[in-house]
Length: 183
Image (tube, rainbow, N blue to C red; front, top):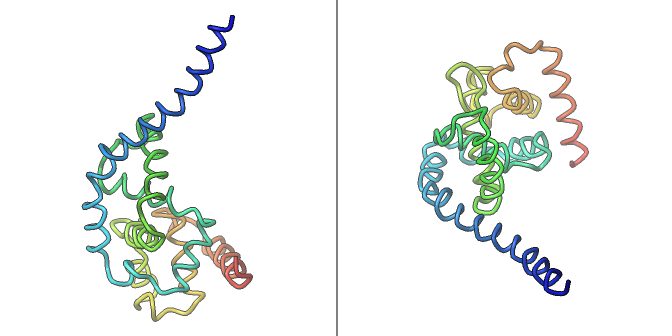
């Protein structure tokens, strides 16, 4: 009985070590080789997407409730064409990459990825492209309300044009209220 108890304790202690070792191996073998590609995506982005105006970055973080890693990881997986979407492998890879993106990328890098790669219409990606498409001006030239509209369009992705203007206005107003409250 004592041997069995000792074997169970050793086995239970080994499980977290095996999982941690597998995670570290995945980090080195599956994530780090793409670090240069991730940097290239950020560097290739429009200047306003690489470093969005402070209010836009704050609105983006508020709209994602501070959780930029999962969305940035999803955009990276899609743009690097690593795993076919809607598969079990996609779910596993997305969960691991969400954690690794949070560990390895700064908040500014995650924001730049979202600002430059978020789809907002057919063939259109990024906040600056959306600002030019919707308002004909650069992102930094927009009013706070217009910037919030661009962020809401980013949240909805490519399907925002199918949502009624009333829904977008309601969500824009809710986002601005959270921004004013300092969320």
